[in-house]
Length: 289
Image 1 (cartoon, rainbow, N blue to C red):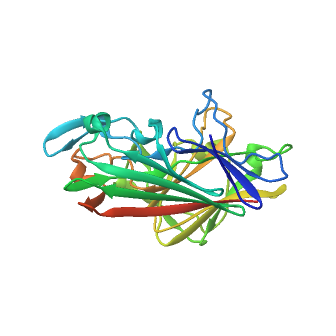
Image 2 (image 1 turned 180 degrees about the vertical axis):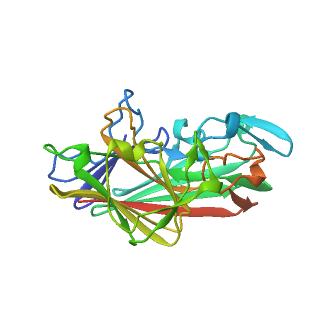
Image 3 (image 1 turned 120 degrees about the horizontal axis):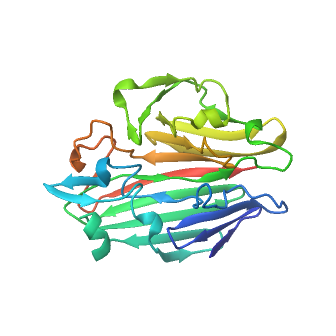
């Protein structure tokens, strides 16, 4: 376990998957991060790399060769090295190896840096390409406890969107993106959280520029905000068929295969590309109150 502390909050992480396990304000016995339960969803806040979402037939082709990879990639199940640690920050490192090469034929270094300042946790991804070229996706999948405080219910909470404007929603056909039937989501107003909200699985939006999303309730002053700049997609997910007490807000630099995907990695919708020795950097922030 890795412990980070600021003047007002504390976070707990693990080198397994470089995953955030806990985020709390000091002086409050209030946990903001979903604590995992296999009855619903056994993870907390996994990193999604080198793909986000699902591939058609759980496979892709690169330069004519077929590779198999399960949903969201392998990084969340790998043991990371702790490269650097201070009182309020930690950097985890994952390097490509013979095992990753079987699924993903690129040499890389993936760094996740968590930095805690007051009640804000900054999460930064750095992807270094050590191959001639590299195609990849990356994203976050933090789950938040909903309801957050005792005496409230799942349906007492709502999603708030900043800036307050409509955004393009990408519907799903099974686990795949339906680009032809994109619609306009009414994210210019708050949206109440309920089981029916997730009846079609995740809500996926295209985004650009500065975005901020909050989980709030009129029955408590406590809530959580996730913010970022220039992530092309965000997903909101919980379970509709079970009373799962969490909601995920997921910033993505990449997305699941489209329903009409060719399976060629180079043609994958939303894929990122790096030349040799180039580094991709992205980050987001989680703020609790």
